[in-house]
Amino acid sequence: MSIVNEISEALLVGNAAKVKELTEKALGEGVSPKDIIQQGLIPGMGVVGVKFKNNEYYVPEVLIAARAMHAGLNIVKPMLADSGMEPVGRIAIGTVKGDLHDIGKNLVAMMLEGAGFDVNDLGIDVTADKFVEVVKDGSVDVIAMSALLTTTMPSMADTIKALEAAGLRDKVKIMIGGAPVTQNYADEIGADGYSADAASAVDTAKELMGV
Ligand code: B1M
Image (cartoon, rainbow, N blue to C red; front, top):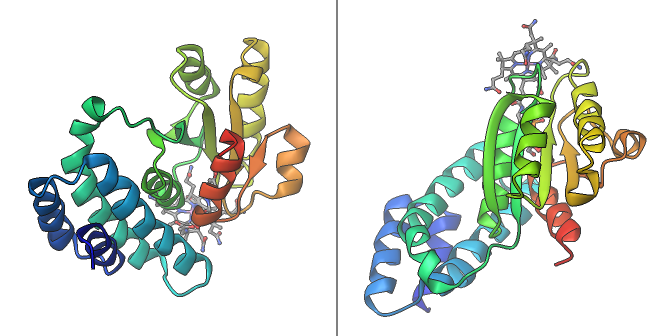
């Protein structure tokens, strides 16, 4: 088995120490940071996503695998600037204003990162103004909003209205999700994409990026 496949396997079983060790070994053998990410870490997280969708993995397994992914990513990320590897896309993610739930949002952020996106996690209780700010400074392709309360879902619509008012709506794609959120709601408020879970969020984000 090649060393990048070994990295995928170690990630899949959540063995962070092994992923770190193999990543260092691979770099020592001259494997590029890009190949470690594209042939080791990303395919590993891809399998995690499929297992999560199929109910073979649950939240704890995904979190443990994501921790293992970060063990490798933290080593190679600083080297990427020199390698010329472009992210799949740049995403700013946050739980919307008034909402403090972040477990699902964090899972989505980890899966997106594992799929090669550059993720700016804005945290919880993120105001429409904050989302507008990151779009204004040109640092994102996609805004990803999470809501867990029926009472905070309207904050998603408020963000879209604020982007429209600022003349920035056509500068960014918007995807939404969270337990009470539906495709119908996404259509109603004019979001570009909706996904029901963290693995599908990767598919939606890729679709929005046209990749
Ligand atoms: Co809260 N809470 N909570 N809570 N809480 C719920 C959501 C609730 C359904 C519980 C219930 O009553 N049965 C209910 C909401 C009712 C409603 O609005 N319909 C509720 C309530 C009422 C409240 C408070 C108001 C309680 C109170 O104080 N009276 C309060 C509100 C605080 C606030 O936000 N302002 C509150 C507080 C809390 C805690 C702080 C205690 C804690 C949050 C801790 C944290 O997140 N750090 C908490 C928790 C843990 C829950 C439950 C139990 C679990 C949520 C969770 O993390 N699920 C929840 C009941 C439940 O769901 N069983 C509940 C696991 C997580 C992996 O799933 O977040 O759905 P989820 O994410 C999924 C998908 O939804 C999707 O992918 C994820 C992974 O597959 N997804 C996206 C999520 N975001 C996405 C974004 C995307 C795409 C997909 O694209 C951008």
